[in-house]
Length: 154
Image (cartoon, helix red, strand yellow):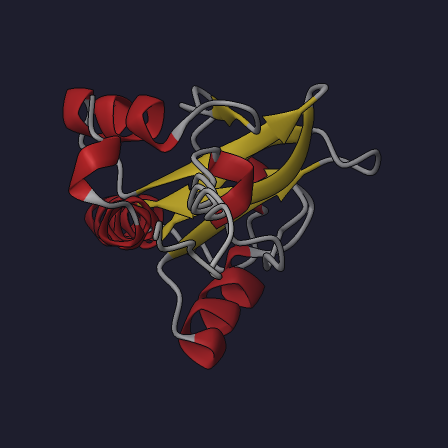
């Protein structure tokens, strides 16, 4: 007498979904931005209030035109003392860095890791169709890597 199985055909185990790999999946979207006409005093107060060390400078249409950082402020504070000139009433446009390293929203976190490895930046503004849509940091890339499983690294 043959024994029949009552279990039936086994269902195939579903594949685990692939974790997202795009910069847009890990970037910060809620950014504090600045305008080129703001005073450097306002910028430094914002840095202190929000405990940030820099931020993107955008025009009225949201296009990235520069970055302002504590380092930019320190350089100008140092030089203003040397030349005995006040800086606090000057605008961000005088201090911001205009040659900005950026990354596209549809780049992978591996692309971002390579970009961070190639330069000394801690954050990269993220652009979509030329407009600022977020920012990704070195920390964001590290956290994204932790979410990936070792078998995904090919």
